[in-house]
Image (cartoon, rainbow, N blue to C red; front, side, top):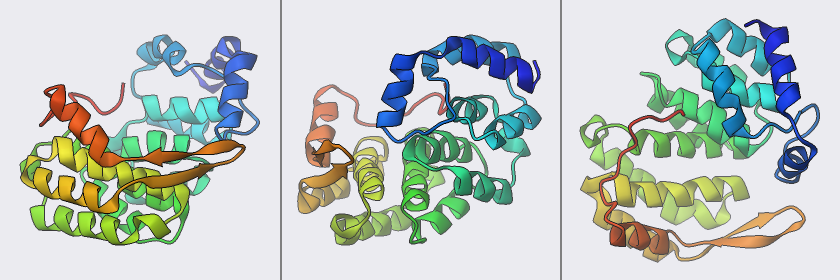
Amino acid sequence: MDFEMVMKELEALGTERIKKTYINNGARDPLFGVATGKMKPIAKKIKKNQALAEQLYASGNYDAMYFSGIIADPTEMTAEDFERWIDKAYFYMLSDYVVAVTLSETDFAQVVADRWVASDEELKMSAGWSCYCWLLGNRPDDEFSTSKIADMLNQVENTIHDSPDRTKSAMNNFIYTVGISYLPLHEKALETAKAVGPVEVKKDKKKSSILLASENIQKDIDRGRLGFKRKHVRC
């Protein structure tokens, strides 16, 4: 399938209801409003195609940009490619669920994520913390430096309440992910979650959300999910 064919198929799958939902969450025109589950049959036909993924991501159409992350081939992408992608990620569904997810399947994920975490740009920071969530929730514990992850927990504890809203959300998820998926620091993550306490995230035109990592960690412990790892990062 080529670019035009994919765009036509995506357009046919779009609905006004889904489009409105996406816009309410931060997406903007152009977009068709395609439910992500509806994209799977097209993805099965294409599998991985980096050249096509680049065309779709460059289109600026939200649905096409999201779909590009499904068919992208991370082994063909460079750190510079990801910098280009994050610069065009204009809201969290792109930064955290397209760019960060795709980055997490590369060998240089931590290097790029570290750079984004250290930036002062909300969505870059969000993508950096989110990338670590995808990494920790999928890869073996021995692939990570325990002292480094511990330092990151300390950073979260000291800065989360003064961080931008989307970054707060990703940081809170980082505490939870370490608490459940990275066993060497399970106890420290619990301590950090309790020290951080409730995290308020403000949303445009909506009531603020209150995030509490300690409760989410405990819920998954009760469900027997301690040590959980995803088999695959992308669907």
